[in-house]
Image (cartoon, rainbow, N blue to C red; front, side, top):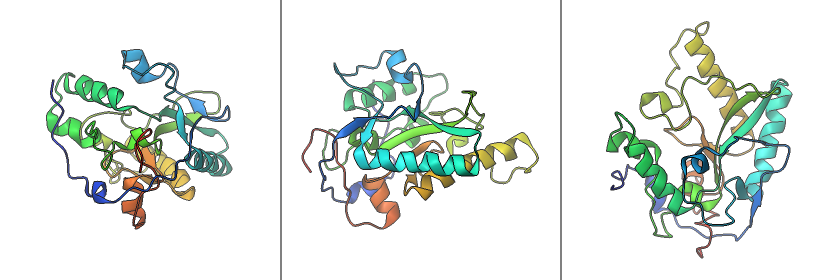
Length: 224
């Protein structure tokens, strides 16, 4: 099964000068989605790969985001859905998404970066700079955000419910997406323009949105 067409991603034109920070596992203070969603589907993670890893500086910022979130909303926590994703897994998930009922190549390409082996244009999750996450209550109960992580179609757009009545369920979903975005922005992350759940720091998307001339992180295992 072929990959979907490449969407317009202007950030992949930016150069990468990898600072060579290591990947580190999420600390115990950050919740993990269990079981890991792609591993549960049978994604081909290389032996010894931990999908709940991020670059050191990204982890530090994620902890700051959690701290700020809990200062504003003591009942809430972040929960990480996915972090580091090797190219093999990216390819698997693109093909899996294309096989879903009603999926189109255009809808899949809108949220899944091509599993590009070119080190100059890596998928964000392959760099250890990107994280997919959502909100949970401190007791572990998940919050409804108006659309699942990896959902195809307009519901993935961060502002899909922006015009909803604030007192409606849709208005609450928009508010919760805003809480997540605010916490991550306070720690320096940028949000993917088409995915309410995807944030990064240090990759090409971050550099493009932040006005930085080059990315700090390339694909793990590939020189910058």
